[in-house]
Image (cartoon, rainbow, N blue to C red; front, side, top):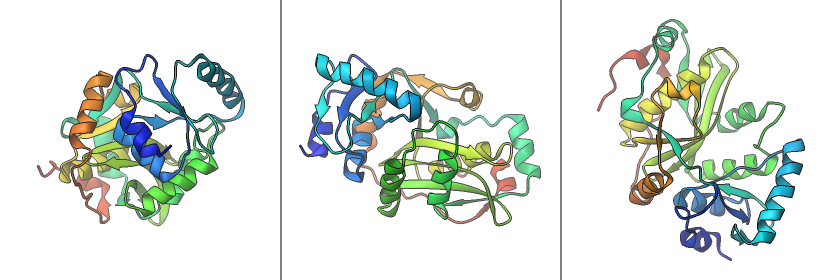
Amino acid sequence: MDPAAFFEGLDVVGAPLELVALGGTLGPEALRAAYRAGCFPWPASGGDERALTRQVRRLARSGRVPVLPGDDGLVPWCSPHPRAVLLTDRLSVPRSTRQLLRRCGWTTTLDTAFADVVAGCAAREETWITGRMRASYQQLHEQGTAHSVEVWEGDRLVGGLYGVLTGRVFSGESMFHRESGASKVALVDLCRRLREAGVLVLDTQQESEHLAVMGQVLVSREEYVGAVHALRDSLAVLPDGRRRASDLTAPATP
């Protein structure tokens, strides 16, 4: 089955579980279709992968979750309820982060080291960013759909994040830091660039204390999917160029 047709017909809002579909492929076409439907893949690794495989096989046999035939096994496609988002024009930057922006001397860029950012995000003991995932998001990046923000200390990459732009909704996938606070700087920079491009919805998927202090809010799955459907066909072009972290403390241009 064509992944675009499958996800277009998938009832994400009415799904009884946060796991809304299984199977298919992690290719770029399926990823793009899933984000347009309001869901994302969430594979696991190691012991978590074995436990997840047992769980999803039971769900697949029960018929409670639709299954899409494909080449990558029982890929879990998820749509959390409630959904955690940041509204880029309402980002709250804590005082400690503002102080870091002023004194760190770092710079930020967009899309200059996508593969290195994904590798940095995957460099942890347990990660859902499998080799297949990395290859597929790299393809999305080359097609202009996936983007990264990099934080630099001179020519050394000290942090960053990446995600997928679907019209005027940006879905954050992961972030990392090699220097304390670098991922927060990446987030502030991303929100600035998104706002300048007219993108006000930043999907952060799951609630976290770290993001709650920066203005993260919870919306219903119905509200989130409705926003995606309303904004997914709008064009947004993120501004590129190198920026000084200290300049991110200035008021953003509307």
